[in-house]
Length: 531
Image 1 (cartoon, rainbow, N blue to C red):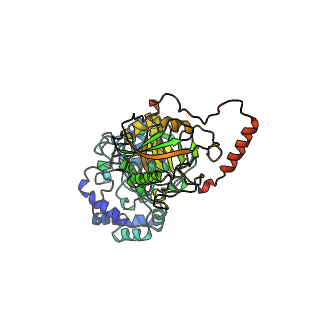
Image 2: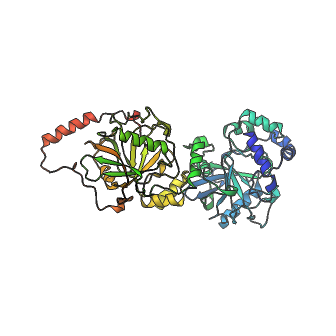
């Protein structure tokens, strides 16, 4: 962790002209010099970051589009000019509509530049001002501070909010050996709440998040491009000046229901930003396809397969289909506007295996997404647990607001994916977690018809939906109908009740049989995901 901090300090030394680098502390020798200047004060000062505001105190209320509200306590007793500048700029509406133009995970999010690139902005007095530093305020997670271009005398309008990292004792000792001085209190904060201790003494800290820290942490998960700029604008809708009225204070990220993205999820999100979805690529004549026939439905369901993106997944499905593995099995789990799931010889979500025996890892590929009609493997926690069970997506069509909400929670969707989910529909929140390996190109109306069958409390159809056959064929040039809008009405199904005068006795008998057959342990079920 310390090496990461030092490497970052070194990398920005050449870019100190605009705090596009909030760590422009220069070399470790420069940092040692600035640290020693405040050593005596630092050793005796108590940290004030987590001092609760009093009722009636001035606070800042920041609304960030698609993310939510963040509230800040200000410390005019330690950063008078810094607080005054921020308050007056906020009152003028200076920050409204600006962006967070620089985001670095486990470090900070930076905004407040009207140029939107880290090169602009000025104080309420025009130009720059010197906000100074005070040892009572440190760079704990949630700290609010001014960006600068080499000293606090170059403070302007640009600010940053710290996310940082939690530091181990060894990390702090390494920093101390390079001239950074910490009190026991500061060490405790950096080793529990986290932060960016190597910035202390070089930047004007003037506030602290009292609510909405999870918003800040979610923003730091956004995908970024050159110069750490978010690929999708993170917009400050408004910054208002308010009064503290005794509402709940939540200083620490542990106070929130927040789960950081894993390294794999972050990598998947970055990948997803850079490729177009290929689900709706038409099969070529002679290409291998799979045809599924369901009992009671006239129209078969035909799948295009994508060995170029899911080779093991496609191979497994083809070999199982050739062996007759799926013939006679059921769709044991059906959820309308989500998916239909089958391929389990036990018929309850607890069985099945791959063509090689046991499970296999089919991986994921960003070219294939959970659009309506997507064919994917169910798993029990990772793609390494793929077997024979599969599902076909029905999903929903997403509005612009719903897409924005997904984006705010870290789902990186490019324009191609957004267009698909907002027109064809699907289940975008499954992307990156399941092996998509095919797409329905004919018979999607059958799938949509199946999703409407009656189900019990475990989402099992009350009357079996049976796979009559699953056959491997060659595409012969038949019509391709990827979208549900390509179909006229629902599929013809012989499973619907043939008349309304069925005897009550027959109905009762059928229901009793179904209840017995659908007994399952849902906690052991191999599922796609919780809806």
